[in-house]
Image 1 (cartoon, rainbow, N blue to C red):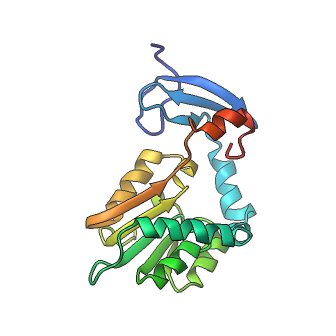
Image 2: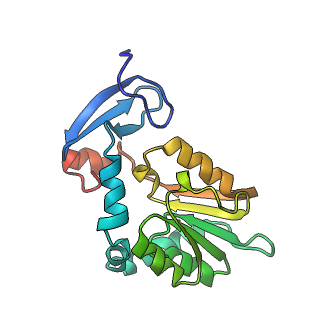
Length: 199
């Protein structure tokens, strides 16, 4: 086993092997937890894109019909709200489409979003929305949510372990955490290789 290489941002082990290059990004796979990550991480460039350059609300607005079908399916798999167990937080809530749909099912909704135009759109649904990175926000209602969701956000986080720990910290005792993320070993990625749109 090869030892050495950049530290994995998930497990911290310094044993990763190069996995490929695309779009000036260098990918590595951790030999311990198998996470595929970029090194060095383009943190400033990505942060600038999401905060200054990118209107995520406009992007998701173009996908609203498709997203609604997706979110309805996810809500059908999740617990339903109950009396005193009806607080939901969507981390990376984008334009709030999932929050709006969850509210029609009886959830009291909150969200966290980095992108200012998307956060404004999410607030327009009536949800309470905090703006910023979950990893850097301290003034949150920790331990208060019966359902915490995070749809396709984990792969965008520079510190996935810290991000995940904070997701759990948001949960009330007995709460449910639901996340989705990309699968680097999926058939579609293997078919398209470095031309996979998610890269």
